[in-house]
Image (cartoon, rainbow, N blue to C red):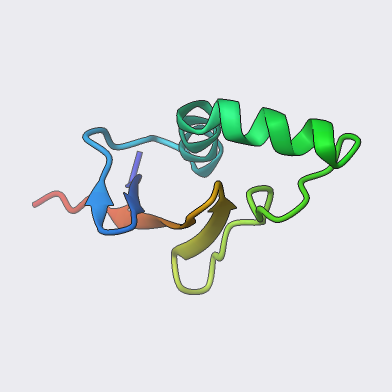
Length: 85
């Protein structure tokens, strides 16, 4: 493993690091499960106003997700390298 992923949600960093982008996205989905489930029901299986299923930005290492649940939640998943000396 040469990198970890951290999640920053509106300035608050999740207390865990994740070993893959997919596991970080799943953590966000689990954290906001109730909101996202309601949105999927309203959108007949598609997210109405949230952008959660986006590809990893491999160029910058920073991927922005968006969830709307009455307020705007900006969630950034950052890929951080692990250095070993």
